Every structure is written in structure tokens, then in C-alpha cells.
Image: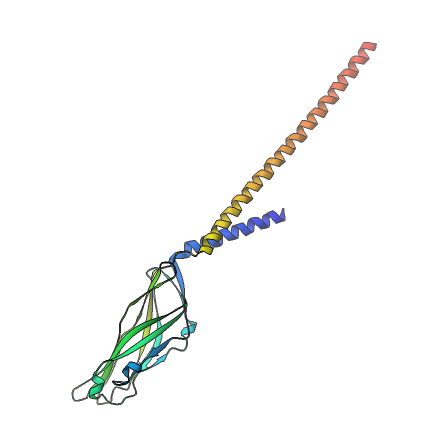
Length: 241
């Protein structure tokens, strides 16, 4: 009896887990990696930019429903040059590599930086813009967009462009991947197990009813035999009298 109940519990758990996996297919859990980086070598001949990537990116985990977005601090950008020269007024290129543990991929996002100066260098600074959003396909029909925030820095009173700005990353889930085969198999095994367990219970109940009917018939036959013997004995006794 305990074994049957245990099997029924296992089948029910498999069914529930399968239903959770399948029904939860409209959401997805992202896990950021800790190997994100930024290539600023494309700015070496112009206004030279540098970047410090958030050292805690690997701790960021978040779940999104389709259509939802999540933003987090990605990196700090800055320049150590103290003055805007003519060559700094030309654009430079940057490439940010965003590391994901789940889904397991690296996504590159290109950007452009450029210095500016006006009012006889009274105002100086720089702009950083990104070529995004970038559409990323993953898994079975899964898709999300990744984008980095555009930032600028400016200073007054001939202070130079050597300031910093923080860049945020935003992830938007466009479509979650279809359920993995294991979730479908788990759901199917749970359904099949419960169906089989139900059939076994029905068969056991039927066999029990048959045994009870056989016992009743045997009892009635025995009672009938006793009554018949009583009738024969009474008939023999009255005949002697």
C-alpha cells in the first residue's frame, strides 16, 4: 500500500514539474558572466577612451517575461587626456563584449566616441554612442535585445575632458525559447504514470469485487447445502414415524 502511494506521489511530482517547465516557457532566467570586456584600441589615435567594467557582473541574475526589460550598471568610461586637440575631434571606435552564462554566449556591441570643444576651449568634453539595440537569437526560437546607454561628459572653465560617465546595459526579452524536450518528456511521463497507476487501481478494485462475489456465492452454496440436508433428514424422520 505504501509503495503504491509512493509511486503515485512520484508520478504527481513529475506531472507538476513538467507543467511548471512547460507553462513557464513564456519567461526566461538570465545569468550574466564575469568575463565582459571593452576594446578601446580604436580610440588610440584620437581622444583615447578607457573603460572599467563592473566587477560584479557575474553576480547578476534576473528573470524576464516576454516584453519585459532589465537594466544594470555595465561599465565606467573616461579619458585621461587633459585637453581637446584637433585630432580628438575625430571619432574613435569601441567594442563592448557582454558575457552571458545563461544563455551561454558573448555579444558584441559597437560604439563610437568623439571629443568636442567650443568657446575657445572654455567647454570641453566627449560623447559616446552605441550601435544598438542588438538583436540576439538563442536556444529554440528565443530572442532578446541588448543595448548600452549613450553617455556624455563636459566641463567648463577650461577644465578639460578628463571626466567619467557610467554606462548601463538593458536586456529586453522578445520571445522565450520553446520548452526543452526534457520538460515535455517529464510532463508526458507524469501523465502516463498517473494513467497507468489509475488503471492498476481500477484493475485491483475489479479483482477485489470478483473475489468478494466468489466468496458470497460459496457462502450461499454452503447454506443451500445445509438446508437441503436438513430437508432430507426431516423427510427421512417423518417417514419412519
